Length: 137
Length: 399
Ligand SMILES: [Zn+2]
Ligand SMILES: [Zn+2]
Image 1 (spheres, rainbow over the protein chains, first blue to last red):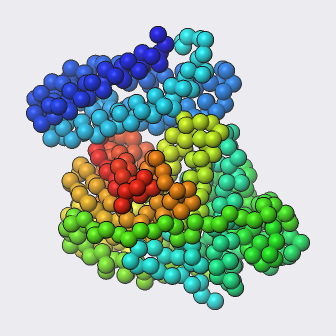
Image 2 (cartoon, rainbow over the protein chains, first blue to last red):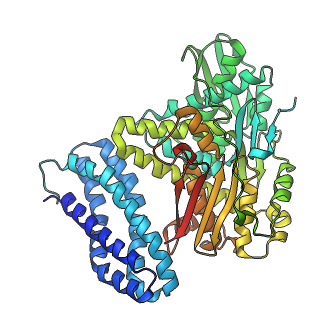
Image 3 (tube, each protein chain N blue to C red):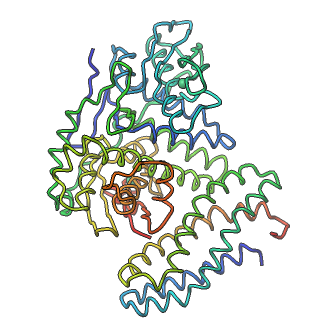
């Protein structure tokens, strides 16, 4: 399995977590419990993603894929901002009021889904073509 | 002579010679240009920046027939142009106090090469219009890179004809405004009328300094052609990933625009005198800013829902982006109103995150803090006219 395959599998798992959280979002305690249950997975995933972009950028440079390097930089700055916000939300679950937690969750879910969509359609193809036949560091 | 600005109050548009014009500040103009020029490794960015200008200006001059083009340039806030040395055999033109050059220096510092691509296109259109022949224009010296004035060399030749501009674009009747749009003591009609009375034509120096920023009454279709061709070229040269990246950059340009232009407006003397007296609550700041936007020629903005501090739903009828996109490119499978998307998150971030009411300095550091730190707002266009919707609808929510 490549790193991208791992990421795709994690996307599916996190999406299932989001759907489960949406199903209980009217109940503050159940929502908190579901978000706590998926927290470790989300944090690990986003930390891995934060490391993906610099590695991908370096790989694009190594294989002289100028377009890939260029695009990766654009994505990196956008994704870093999102990562930080998503991680802040999950790390601070217990500190937020139930109302803030519920409304932020809706936005966080939207941001995560949009991001996964962008990565699957735009970023992973760059990864696949630049790491073809190689294993990521 | 006076420049024949035609107002279309029912559509919240303004036009000259059949070309829609919109107010935008140097922050947006220069940031957008830089976002595109920075992709020079992937696309041929410079012709993109100049060609679109030549096309929209030429369309306008053709419709106007006889017009003092130097006066037009000055009136729109681009600086002072001298085109008297243009001849059928070519020649040169100069610009003093170029909006793009001065804006570039104030935002990014000195440039290593000329930056007035729009001006080059404007001059190309003037030469084509005046001499009924084809020309190309290159800026050979620029204030942004240290010259005393910007110089443009005009050479016969170039594109045999220019594509038609989308003009006023594809316009459809506006549906009734949402009920939420008027749930405020802010008197939008009075604000739009008052803004219409502000002296927003360029000074003798070709400057429109208002709301603490340097404004231009720019060509809506310049932004449209530029943005959508950029998007297209990125996709055709570097695939769908590049188109996605282009869209991120264009939405970011919208945020930059909102931060500086909306921020500048909400901290301005005009706001203090005209709008602040109507404001009772923090939510009224949203309505006040939306009312001012409705005087900028950007289409008709309406608050459709507002949860204080948490969520804004904004409906835009006849956005200049959708008008232009539909006319020039037809239907789309993705939302196309990038400026309005960035502006929606920008508006909410200024009011509920950056505490614009306390009049902070609108610095790069505050921009970073406002759009990157804490519980900031993100926006998306959930319905777009280019995809078949009756109006464009944007949602900003807090993370
Ligand atoms: Zn210049
Ligand atoms: Zn739209």
